[in-house]
Length: 391
Ligand SMILES: [Fe+2]
Ligand SMILES: [Fe+2]
Image 1 (cartoon, rainbow, N blue to C red):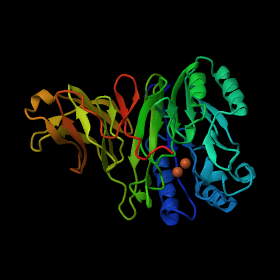
Image 2 (cartoon, rainbow, N blue to C red):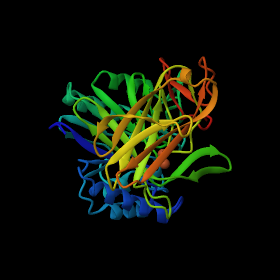
Image 3 (cartoon, helix red, strand yellow):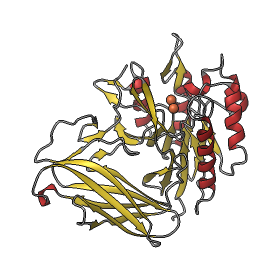
Image 4 (cartoon, rainbow, N blue to C red):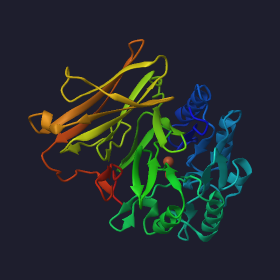
């Protein structure tokens, strides 16, 4: 690892407290902290990007604080609606957790961790850049000068038909993105949707991370969420490239996987994992498969992909760190019949443990209408975030 390179981690939507899964949420947080502390190269910092608790009560914030006490990695947390709405003002957060926004510098990278989720006049919550936050961001970014900046906030901006999805709807995400684009912003790191994905908003990379509490919100009444593997995100920055990896956790009684593989991207489409929340991805020309692998107990010896089982193709390693990254090219012309298939990837470690991931693909001769994915920016980049209707 070069001298400038370092790891950091993100925990989001931890939701300690009484409403979702109180026992598992606390256990997931404990698991994540223990795993992060035992990594061969310890992350420099943990970003906790909001929804630390459920009901925003002082007692819940105290419970969260007790759970993270003693962690040897510094944790920088920002507040979101679930953290604040149980109290009349911000004093419980300020007393127990810390400031509403913070900055830090690691190896010349500036981290700005800020509170974009605001009380609105009608008693609800909105994501908004207010004057006070704008002045703080401007002065911090001026101090950063040309150095890379990582923004941590709760709600992700996803532009949609001239507006923005969810909490940034009818707000001023454009103003925020314009401000960030005037500086060397590496990425905006977010949570809130309990899903993993990535896209660009006004040219700025947005990395959205799933919930550590292990619940997926899908907005389909009457069941607003269902359980899935919890996890956290690791980041690696080498002075040029910011890489990220979602680590799957323990699923209720099932331990975290010793080998984990994720098919992250097919061509310009992010797959919207963690599974099984994926939709078919159209592959109508040669496309790159991008895969991440983490093996806990032994070296990774093999990573392969297949559209037709028994016909496995090896992949090429492009990054080797706490996790590894692999690529291959898929060419629909090599498969003589178009239609829906399953793109499977698998990894094997030196002890013979295997892991699989699979994403449905539709081989086509031209780009057909997408079923659900939203085109995140011109150029064909797609994201699979619009899983519920905008309010
Ligand atoms: Fe949440
Ligand atoms: Fe949230």
